[in-house]
Amino acid sequence: MHPALERIALISDVHGNLTALEAVLADIDARGITRVFNLGDYVGKGPRGREVIDICRERCAVNILGNWDDFLPDPDREFDSPSLTWWLDQLAEGQGEWLRGLPFSHDFVVSGRRIRLFHASPTSVHRRVRFDHFEAEFLEMFTNTPATGDGPVPTVVGYGDTHDAYLEVDRESRTLFNTGSVGNSLDDPTPVYVIVEGVVDSLDDAPFSLQFVRVPYDVEAELAVAKAMGLPQFEGYEAELRHGVYRKDFVAGVAPGYHRTER
Image 1 (cartoon, rainbow, N blue to C red):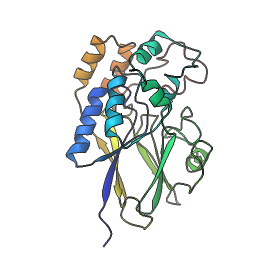
Image 2: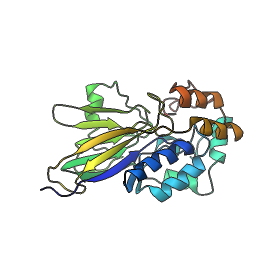
Image 3: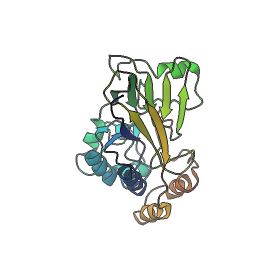
């Protein structure tokens, strides 16, 4: 008999949507899962980044850096907009430093599979890899880089960033998956997270699974809070939460190189 299987919940891209986060965490709790790993983008887009950070610092065993977490509180950021100022002002003292100090990636082992988690790509939180990528991009996701560090290369890679959940396996059994987004899902607007199940910390082959979970929540309550707080670009937020329709160029004045990383 193999050892008992354990489950780990992976969440990503909460983006200040506290209502969605609370619904997802309630579902995780109802399943008896106690370990939660967060793949980044706690802030921006939604109105309650401060509260999301507080909860994730308390609840998540692993917290990883996202692109918004890197550039929004960057003290050397040379561009700005009223929207960015508003989101930054929502953060409590010290939260910006905490975000920018988060690790780039996290490696662990489950059922003989070496798993690596990062936010967007193995090279940068600001480099996006979409679900309709080239084979070379797929293969690059499994490589070591200066950002990930050295060590055994992963056989399973999970990431967020694009807000589109998917799973892909090649002929060498390399597995690439995207967790989708808890707070700003753009394929189906229903929040989604991933459950990893297997024998944790074991290099021996054993049963292994990845499960995508959709969790409905009170969208109207979230939008009511956002409107009452004076959230910038409210119409874009409303379109994304109601319909999963991505707002175009929603950060006015974004500098070159950042317009591709705002999700």
